[in-house]
Length: 91
Image (cartoon, rainbow, N blue to C red; front, side):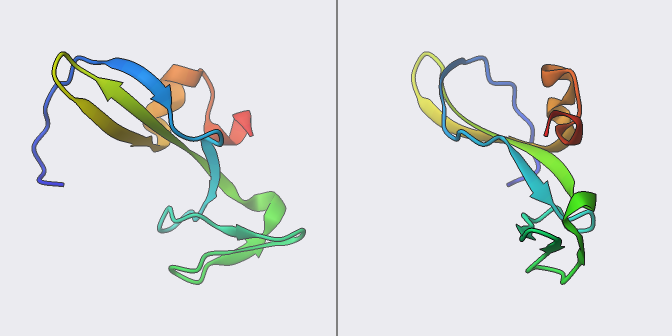
């Protein structure tokens, strides 16, 4: 990512993933490994009880403008207004 922002006016062609909510580490936002009682973050080593896991949105889309197709992934709380609730509440 180069740090520059651009406005893209496009149409959503398809949603690329069926699961758009995932358990995430509260420190590094990586996907957690859940078992029946515990969670574990492979990236930073955070552990805890599965019932206390945080959840985040991850929505992957295929979009098209007038000339090109793009794969776009939107993460986190930026999707709260779209869904009307936090990912944890939706889960």
